[in-house]
Image (cartoon, rainbow, N blue to C red; front, side, top):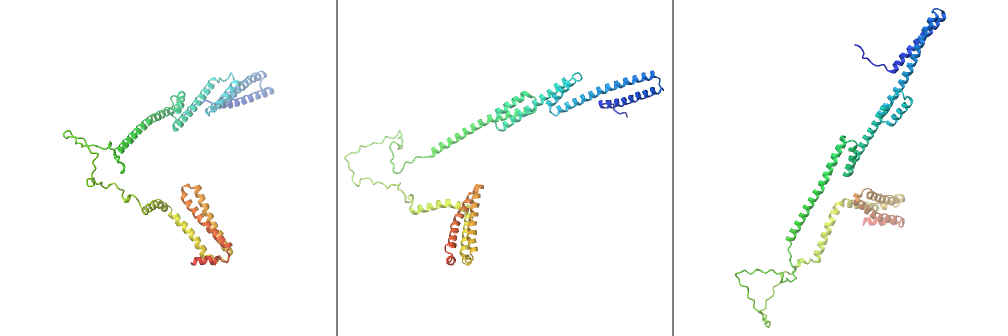
Length: 393
């Protein structure tokens, strides 16, 4: 099976021409040696040498041209690789340098125009990508008009880009959503106002005006029953101004039915009970939420008091142990509680109630620390007996 034909590269041609040049050189050297030895006539040797020298000159000329062609080919390949890598300025500068060095060999105008066109196209693509990204960022921030402007510029540069069309569709959709939102909000507000007005009218209709018990009813406000057409109006007889009724004729005033009951005026005991019930309603949730802290505070304070009262008489003789109990136990624990409360207040604001309880424990421990310090310093001899007797009582 024959091998596929391939075009030799300039490097292969130069290598073969170099081998041929070496062969011609050896032939010329052999002819010169034969002419000197007399084996070949002089005129024939001269003719043969002239032929081979001419072949050598042609080989050298062709090798020089091929070397130049190879160098130009390598430069053009480098320019293409540079342009494909996106370094268009460097590729353009290399082409201009090649044109200055070999103005009659290679025409670089077409390649230069192609590279410049690719440069403009890539710059346009980058600008379109930037505009689309900026428009999407504006959409995320709700700036529909700014996004529309960015996409208009991108559409002028690349109207056939799919990303530009998708971004324009997103802008139109968001603009439509924004135009619908105020209408929906207005409708909802109208419905809410109508509901509020209806509720207000219903409340006003249900409300009945009742005059106070001590307020006299005005005659103009009194409701009179209409007189039917068949009935005659009542005859109003004049009242004699000189007529003075006897006590038996006088009408006995009826007892006031609207007298204030005794229950409406709460007594002092009732007011005290009501006040206590109100405080109970306030304190119960607080105690339920903080009962654990209150129990803990009570145990801490009681533990310190029991420790001092129970063991003071035994440790009074040991000054180191006594001072360590006072300053190390009480003062250190008080400082630790204060540090914990301060840390919780700064770092965990949601634990404010816990911090407050710890501060209360600290406030209760501080007098205990000072009392123990006074007992250990001012009354060293009688301290143990006094505390032990107090504990036994």
